[in-house]
Length: 303
Ligand code: NCD
Image 1 (cartoon, helix red, strand yellow):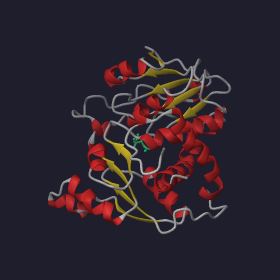
Image 2: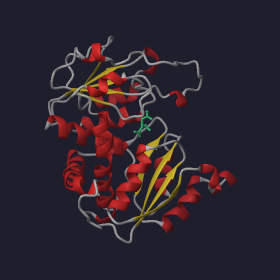
Image 3: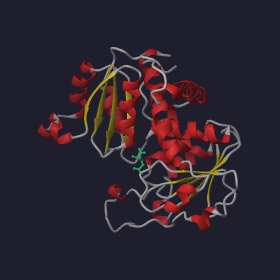
Image 4: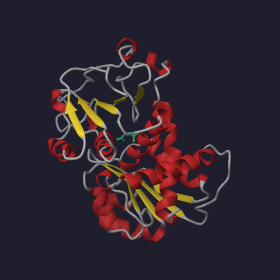
């Protein structure tokens, strides 16, 4: 059941939850591109609060709401809110939920989404809380996998890059664990390994393993990520990507595998790879609108 629900972490998603969103997302495709008009959320207001940089997540939520006939209020400038006067997130949510029918928030602190949601009576959607979770990214990732590979069950998904601070891979791994016979393969620089507690928890329900060197040849999905420099306590902790996916590396992949990335990329994927038919990251980013339309409609109206 999605109606009225807070969307904080994919640890709480069931397979049915995910499939409900994916099914509706497919029906939203035409409307997401402005080819069909369906004002399902007319009269509703979405509040978007971005206390951390965002381009695609913020724009796609706003477009999703507008395409469904709803309105958007919000800010991407924390200094312009009463947070700058020392107001707590808890108090701010008391105001924001009076002004809106759902709230989307991105915030640099892990756990901020849960706290803010507890203070709000309208559905609250986590658009990224520090290095913890980014559940709507996982939904659009799964939508893209299903769209491109026709299934999720049975796939081997290779997660690459900053697996320690990368919230998208945390959310995606939990969401994948709801499917049958999935293998999650991890490869990262030694300093940026997947959190041990998540690994231990996931091991209970999904095949998950780390590989010591980069090997793309067995993956059905290669999911690259950016080194999350902004999360490092010590800026010298680890500054560069451990690998670059270039044409030579991509040549070792299966013919029918796909390459994904939550974007923005820095240097993890060479621009020459964009022309490869397996590169699906721009398609993935575009899918965010339909998927967020489906989710907004489900949490606000149940349909
Ligand atoms: C990701 C994020 O913010 O976690 N971006 C996104 O939402 N598409 C990934 C990143 O910033 O590297």
